[in-house]
Amino acid sequence: MKKIALAIIVSAALYIIACSLEDSWPNATTDPHSSECSYVMKKHSKQMIMEIHLKCAYDRTCKSSIDFGPSIGEKYNDCKVGNYEYEFVTEKSKKKIRLNSWDSLDVYPDNHVYFSLFDTTGAEKKYDIDLSAFVNSYTLREDSADILIPENTKYIAIKCPEQKGLLLCYYYNDSLVNKMVTVGIGDGWSPYFYIESWINYTTEYGADSISISSSIDLVKDNPK
Image (cartoon, rainbow, N blue to C red; front, side, top):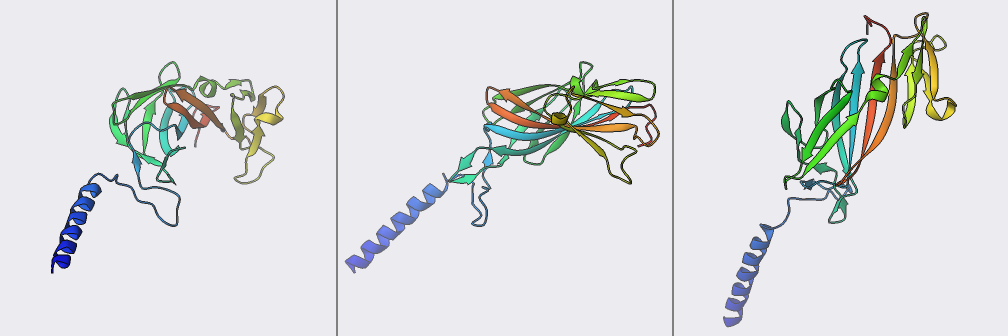
């Protein structure tokens, strides 16, 4: 009887210890079929992936928005941490963002966008991104436009007479000696073009990779 009573006491003690430890465990699980964690980062990660979408109508203030992709390089219990929770703050808005969140951004007269991310400690990660190279990327002529390819551009794409249907002409940075391409206006050319670029944005909390997808009008009253 003494042995049974001792076993019961030991089991009860172990149960109490396990329960107390469980309260301190982080809210994280790992899918056995995935290397991704369900753990949510609440301190600034070493790297984030973002995408800024820029739309510039002819002779008007440009509009933009931002998509928040995964964090990179963070691990918890040997699994990759992609999700996070930060406070996204602009001059006009304040909201909680996580993986795959998005919001609009004002493009200021200096062609910059400004925003901050605050983590759970209150640390501020400030962003000041210059979009001038995209907003002012072209010079108009009578029936053509010279497009100066911004740094770190993947390609410029435009509907051209040589391609049928929805196919576009692509001009890649590495293939252009002068980093400039001349496109037509009218006669089978679309009245707008696309630029796909990226920047590496470094702060005291790490280096983020920001893709910039731009759609730029070449003519007034674009029917698109």
